[in-house]
Amino acid sequence: MQNNSDPASRIILLDNHLISKIAAGEVIERPASVIKELTENSIDAGATQITVEVEDGGKKLMRITDNGAGMTKKEAELALMRHATSKIKDESDLSSIHTLGFRGEALASIVSVSRFSLKTKTKESQTGTEITQDGAEERTIKEIGIPEGTTITVKDLFFNTPARQKYLKSSSTELGNIIDVITSYTLIYPQIHFKLISNANTLFTSPKTHDMQANIATIYGKDVAEDMLKINYEIPPIIINGYISKPSLTRAGKRHQSIYVNKRHIKNKLITRAIYDAYHTYLTIGRHPIFIISIDIDPKIIDVNVHPAKTEIRIEKESDLYEAVYSAVKSSLEKSELIPEIKDNTTQKRIPLPYTRPAPQKTSYAPQKTPYLPTKTPSYTPKIAPRQSLIKETEKDITFQKLPDMQIISQIANSYIIAESVGSMYMIDQHAAHERINYEKLKKTKDNRPNESQALLNPKIIELSQKDAAILDEKKELLRGTGFDIEPYSDNSFSVRAIPVILGKQYSESNVTDVITDIIEASKITNIDNLKDSIIKMIACKASIKAGEKLTDKQMVDLLKELEMCDAPYTCPHGRPTIIEMSFKEIEKRFKRT
Image (cartoon, rainbow, N blue to C red; front, top):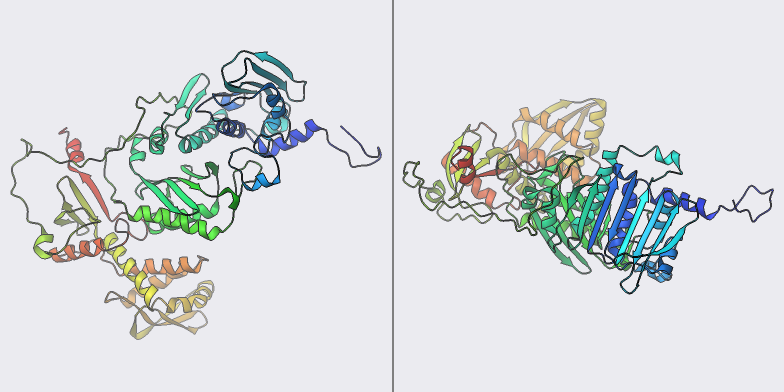
């Protein structure tokens, strides 16, 4: 080690190789980190084709080949030095970064902990350059003949840092992380042809296209791509594009979520919160949407230099970005028909690792959703006189714009309304539908004036535990704003003098204890707005038509008429669907008619 101070000093200067190995600990965590850094370099070099080869989950070998601009011999030598970069020249460039890489740490860090080889050639050069180096060993440089572009080979990652090598996961786990990296860039750069090869097997290849949805189909499957909603939203200086899943298409985890800022794949709690807040009542508890959100913003108002791996950013005017993302997602949901369709269960799914995915046969993807319109009555079906629509009989002036143009047929199990259109059958959950109607009415009432109350002839006394009593006492003013009148009665008991009246329907006193108990559970929510919303959901649920409740024809018609007027008619406030569709074509498939 270098030591430029007093020999007796305990403070020494580290040599460059040790400095690089320490830096590698910040930038290079696992094989996927190497793939990420090298892929970003290939993208910055203008590559339109990037091939990634790995062995043993990247632990034994990683090789990335691109057809980008390449480097001269001098540039290649400089590129392997710490803090050597073509992306920035002075301090002012840090506030206007348009590239994915810029620090100049990645290559030097990778070289320090692997057996490294770089082959590169520019279009203008007659020959290419090859540089090889094993960790701290002396590097070798020679001229070679290769096509334009760059190939980097990384073998035996962490061979000289065994303490870090032992923390690597299984080959399948490390390969899964690499696939996540490649697919994340495939989604945002559809114009680049990506190819991933593992142990000599082609796992993944993406068509070169300008359609993000085509690559969604390649990565997540055609059925997923068909259930994605497009986002195209602009409030200068912010432009938001991408796709979000319909509420009927969710996952138990958050792996299928990608956020990009200026094409950089990042993680950001503010943006994620804005997306989830926009979904709000569209999602059921424990379910998560799929989304690919691309945000273009002036690089001068973001800081990408806050994390060694460049996966996080700092944003000026966070409230403006939140509102833009929230509005983009919410408007897409509100403008779309969100009725989930019952389909054949043999849908395409992402195959668990390890796997071999054959190359797709199609080079473009255009999702089609053509309604099933029979041209004539099938010969096997008896001719039936057209039914008279209950809607047309009872409500002459009703028209559907959000909901399908359908006729009510009947009610089954005193719980579901059955209706049909030209090409489909629909099932409406009467409780979920009424809950959505009540929720939106109650929200509008809350926003415009205090909720009306119904005084109880005999105040109801409820007894609680000390903990629950403390929570209820703290929230009693908030509850008063929703229509409750609750006052302390004794040490751990309360007197309920009035309860909310919703849509002319009064709670029975027997429901009061259940409602208060639910509110106490909701009171564990720390955000006041979320607490109010949770209370409103409870009240809407208690006031709604129940499953098992017989409805008249007019009641069914009135229910659908009110559902049509809702801002979000396709789910209840808890995210359950209010209506589902089954096409006649699908019904015929189930009966083996087709």
